[in-house]
Every structure is written in C-alpha cells, then in structure tokens.
Length: 77
Image (cartoon, rainbow, N blue to C red; front, side):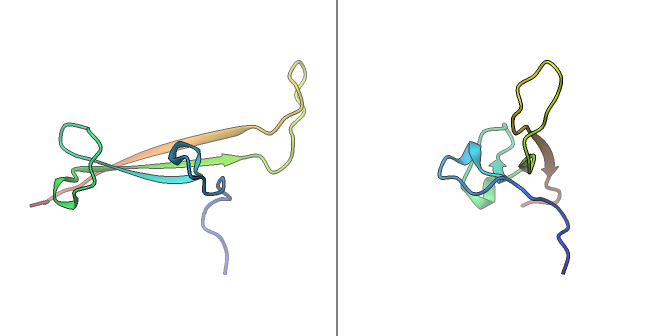
C-alpha cells in the first residue's frame, strides 16, 4: 500500500484543529447536519512540516498550510 495524500495533522476534539475535516452546508451556505439539506461539502485538509524549518529572518519552527475544496452536489432531491 502507498498513501495517496498526507500526512495530515492528527485528529483534535476542536474541529478547526483537525487535519481532515468535512463541513456540510445547505443552499444558503449555513452548516447543517440534516442529510436532506446538504447542498455542498467543504473538505479542509491541514498539514504541517515533519521537521522544523530554518529560514533567514524567521524563527526555526514547524510550518503548516491548508487547502479547502468545495464540492457542490447535483441532482439532489
């Protein structure tokens, strides 16, 4: 086996700190937990460097980045 993506940040009880998160939204853009109301899904992936990075003029530290992909659902009832 080989990883397709990652490594992501580990799971966190604070949703905004987790490495992989799904946010379900209705047609107005508000978050929803009702499956029949889901119009789009935001997929958020967060990653962090494996080792501290050294850059001139900046402190040696771990750096992170994120990516958001929005998927609109078609043909929903």
